[in-house]
Image (cartoon, rainbow, N blue to C red; front, side):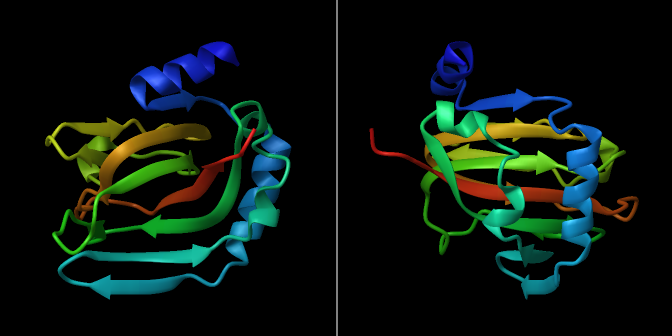
Length: 169
């Protein structure tokens, strides 16, 4: 865990692959299927479908966060399809990002778009690598996040993004 913490502080992102055991993955997928997804469309900032995912549905799945001194405060599931996106926009302020991203899409071609990208105030960007059943832990001081446009080849991408907070020690 020291190596994880060290990499997170240095790089701002850590990816853990083949994260959930098959049984837990199947249970989470069933819970997500029961969510009420709502389309959100604001042409200048975003277009996607998402649903609030109760933090209790993630209980026990991310126990490593406790070692990092973090806990989940809220979570949202996103379904990204053709024409979905979010953009960098002046009305969206840069902020501190502490979040985890769980990729639940079994097969996705990079050429379909839909990348998750963080951009800092100097214009440097970091594209988050997608991999089925992987978790990315992100900790950025000042950044904006956006989803690249999903083109007409895109199937459905399912992603969970959970905000985390550092616990006082």
